[in-house]
Length: 97
Image (cartoon, rainbow, N blue to C red; front, side, top):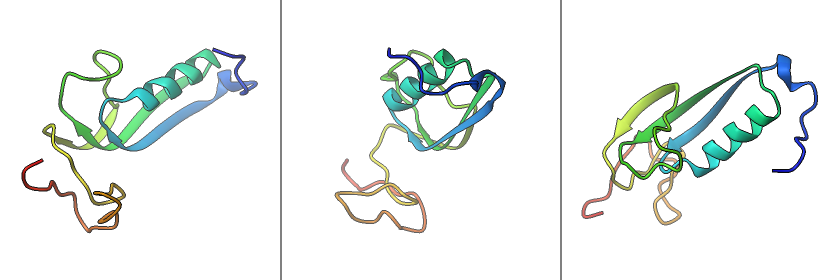
């Protein structure tokens, strides 16, 4: 990994948030980057966590999670389905997927 851009990050307490934790590759990379930069403390929060065994890092879990769902495609509240329904007023799963 290249030299961290963040300077003086060792005194910073950070909260990283995401809409969904599916496989978690992006969240794992950001956590690794912040740790390498010397973050004093890191916490993670997600709206939705999918329960399955395909996480990018074994055992990857958010510190705070609003909803755990089974391993299905979900949409609504910022997550879209084929480019649609991003603003649906709830979290839904299409039938058959």
